[in-house]
Structure formats: structure tokens, C-alpha cells
Image (cartoon, rainbow, N blue to C red; front, side, top):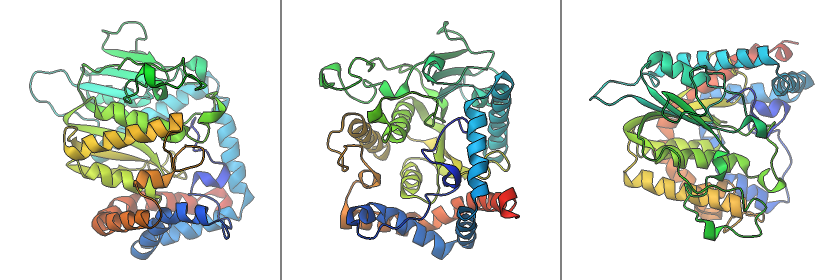
Length: 389
């Protein structure tokens, strides 16, 4: 969850895609950036608040006080004492309730005699599940979270059990990115030379259960000690692992809440478009105060159809991305980590065509749903202490 987790970025990169740099002479880098360039251009043309936000970001880059602010914030988060951990838990619970007031995403509509069921991926410290239980007191909750011994958060939801798998609230502490069986990889397909060959799991947790509401709230943790091969690939591995597990557990017509970053990059836009192809509705939510300065936001997909062809194809593609990022097989990058072109599914000119086609079809909807996200961040940037000097 948000405060204690890294965006693989520093300082003012917390609020925007990246600090402007010169890339002339690097044809491959320019080509890989093309999808983002097309998205940025479309938003600049059609959304005035985005033009304002870009200018505020530019001003922020010129002020070192912004970097200092985020560095201090990360230091407090990484070294939080017990009181700080409780504050974070309560903040996430408050964000969950704010999200529900805005979208009704956490309120499970009654129907039939089945018990409402919630799946919380990257659950600890449990703030979102606490909010969901407040809205649905009788709900069954199942969660997966990185063990604290590996740098994960402590579980602060008092109702949660780590030993009784039949409890109303049960959490399994494990690294979700190592669930190879869930991603369609068998033990015999794990290269013996892989640095974590003996660490992968082949069981499929909670497969027998269908869930009305699924949280995909994971984000790479700075406190998680990882092998070097994972550093450039972890964000992709974590997101795809969550999406695959979620879509293979969600009930027909269920709701997914997904933490994302940077609504103006192709990876985020592509995911919005993808979910729109197999969901009744897609909307975005950003808290008014907590994390308002940051690029983070939530994608809420309602009426998800996990058996639709578009959903099944998405699961297949996410498994491929995870496999590429984990084993370096067939990736577009030299290190096999994959990049935004692999998420486009094309390269070069064909990637350009795919992005343009999506923007032509989905662009008007995109402008409508991202405007509140950019408005909240722009307002927060205007009022940031370093912007007033």
C-alpha cells in the first residue's frame, strides 16, 4: 500500500513520469518512449487541466525543496515506529471508506444466500480490508501479503488470522510474485540456473473460492530485499501476478480495485482500456488529501466478466509478461525484462499504430475519467510548500 512502497523513483519523480532528460542519439530509447509520447500529446490537446499539471510539474523540477520533501517522507515511512504503522493503517482505512463514498466499490450488493467474499492481494497492514468489513460486516476475507521477515508490512487488522484457514479473515504470508503455478509455469519448466529456482510455489491459493470484491493494492517495497535480477522487473512482475490471480478468482459481475501510478503513461492507459473491454464500467479514484501530491490513483472496474474472451486473452498476455520478466524468455529488452512495447504487444511502427487506435476509440472516455485525478494532483501541487516560495 501506498506510503511505505516505492515507485522505483526519487524526489519529484513521485509526482510525474520522469525528469526531462536528453535522449537524442538513442534511437531505441526514443522508440520505446513513443507510446507515452502519443498519450501525452493526446492529453495535452484535449485536457486543459493536464496542460496546467505539466507546467506545475516543470516548476517543481526546478525546486530542490520538492526532492527534500519526498526524501524525508520516504525516510519516515521506511523507519516507522509502532505509532507510525498504526497511523498508516488508519489512513488506508480512511482512504478505503473515501473510495467507497465516491464509487460504492466496497459495498457488496446482496443477492442470493452466499456470503459476501473479499480477496485482498498485498493485504497488510489491512486498512482496505478493514474498510470493506465496515461496509460488509459478514464478509469472508482472504488475503495474501509479503511476510514481514522479507520486508513486508505487519498485519494490524485484529480480526485477521494467519493460522486458521477457516476463519472469517485469513491471510497467507507469501511472495505473490513467486506463484509460478498460478502463472502457468510448471516445476519442470523452471530453469535450474535461475537464481530463485527453489523458491517458486506451484499451489494456487483460494482457487476454490469466488470473490465479489478484489483489491490489487500491491506496490514494490523499498524494504523488500530482492535479488539483483528482480530490480528492473519487479513492478511488472508484481502487477501481473496480482491481475492474473484476481481475474481467476473474481465472481462474474464482481468489482476490482487496482492501485496504479501515472495516469498519463501508456501502461496505465492500456490497462484502463483493457478492463473496459470486459467490465460494465471503469472509473478512477484519487483521495482528496492523502497522497494527493503523488501520481498514485485507483482503477475501479465493476461488472467484471472473467470468462469473456477479452478477459481470458488478458490473463494469457499478463502471464507472458510475468514469464518474460521472471525468466527473461522472449522479452523485448536485452535483459529480457520487457518494457512498455511488450505491453503494447507490438514494436516500432506497429506499436505506434496500436496506441493511436486505442486513443481514437478510448480517448474521449480516457479524458473524462482522468480529469479528476489530474485536478486533485494539480491542486495539491499548487499548494505545496515548495511551490509557494
